[in-house]
Image 1 (cartoon, rainbow, N blue to C red):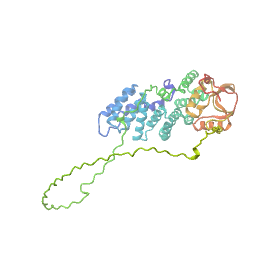
Image 2: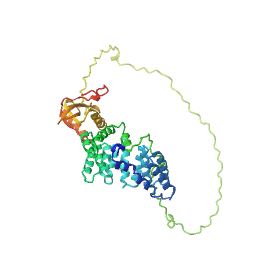
Image 3: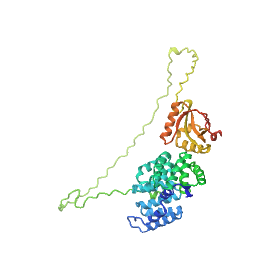
Image 4: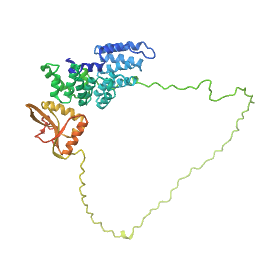
Amino acid sequence: MTNRLLVSIGLATAMLGGSLGIVAMGTGAVAAGGDAAAPRLAAKAAAMLGKDKGVQAVGFAEQAVALAPRDASYRALLGRAYLQAGRFASATQAFSDVLALDPADGRAALNLALAQTATGDWVGARGTLTAHAERIAPADRGLALALAGDPAGGIALLAQAARDPAATATVRQNLALALALDGRWIEARSVASVDMAPALVDQRLVEWAAFARPGNAAQQVAALLKVTPVEDRGQPVQLALVAPADPVAVAAADAPLVAVAAVDPAPVEAVQTIPPAPVQVATVEVPRPAISFAPRREIVQALPTAYAKLAPAAPVRMQTAAAPARIQTASAPAKGNYYVQLGAYENAAVARDAWTRISRHVPRLAGHAPQGMRATIRGNAYYRLSVGGLARADATGLCGTLRASGGRCFVRAHAGEQLAVWARGGNQVAAR
């Protein structure tokens, strides 16, 4: 349970296919051509996956797909090999092909959403999870949603699954991680402590804090699967899934387009071909037209008499145009005394993690500087994270944008906020 940050072993196994599932897959359907080499290559790829040798597995799986390009099980194996090799762009293509061949494959849909998340396509990942919701277990779909930038939606699914009397520790740990990704660290600690000793809970929260602050889109998925992401140019072109060609209708032999009477043609006298008499064409010397130019004559236009005595023009006084009226753009909110609180966290470090995640997910926050203040509520110390210095209407609009993106916030008046401690290095936007 210590591997993969205690993230759902069920989810990670489902994403990679599970060792048992992969080995069993090696005996799947054979290509239409009956090529006996394809199953053997698939079995070798499965064996390499079982040994965590993703690069070698890719080689065998690609050969199997090349021999049986319309076998969905071989393409699913190839996709899982790409995941283990850290090739997320190729995995996205492979699992898309699997679903094109077998739309009911829920495991492939979950794998596709994972690969899309790793490539930064959060919208596509959420769309995949929604389209295949009935075929993906709620506990797995909940954590996948949280990873794809919708922690609130993931928490809703996981909380419902955790209330089931048959819920496992894995489901509860998934819920705890989703809460951590949403910045709700106190609740995450409470849920995690149900199945873990207090000392382990503290260690797990430290790991989750690093997990919630990835340097790029691929790092979270790579940490989840315990793989190393690599530069990936995509699946080889020759493995692209090609739709079968439509059959060409051939006219029946007994239905000729033109009926020909079965009559022997009458003999035709041979016609003597008389060659045409040669015609002599006289070569006429056509004179080339000479280009002649008219004699050059200067044309002088007489000036009007009114121009005879032209006084120097009076200097024109250039009037400075009136400054154009300032147009207030929607992106320049008016200053005011209202703030949008984004959350209350255990300390400034946790708040900084939350700010990094929220500002990356909501581009509108790019023009605002993070504000923070310490507060004590019911004896517990918190660090409030907000943005503000806005008019009430602007603050309400910004909070609405955050909620539409799946975030949580509320609007309140100024309560002593200052520029957040991590934003005081001089490289951040000045506080409004």
